Length: 185
Image (cartoon, rainbow, N blue to C red; front, side):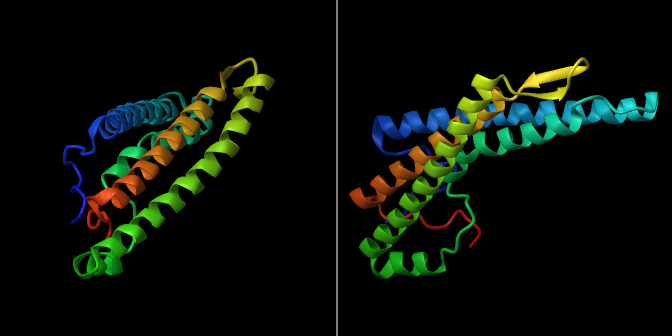
């Protein structure tokens, strides 16, 4: 049996629904951040053309927002099975040996969870240092922003994405089978 296609209602009871709601909420915030980034870039372009000068912090804020945008949407991307991976072997294996495909899919998900957890831990340590040290981006006396909210969003996105991977591994091993399709086949 293959997993649900992207956009399908999340299966798996309360945990699956909770992860889906949290992931989709973070993805919605990510979408809002895209709008914020578009406004910032447009305002900078307008200022360059009208005033002949760039707005302060556009590149720094843009770079920080891009990280937030990507990592807040990651859990939903994982749940929708939209990460780039090769499903040729997994898809063929799912039809002939569904249990082996489920185990292989669970291994993929668990490796993803471990990698995201390690990156998240490093991000958490950096977040703690930035928060304690009062680190800011910008030009002192002109405009500055604390860096920790961006780090917190990064760590939160990674944590929820890692949990999504763990949940999918559990689902694959508990009888739902391998999640095939939906990615870049």
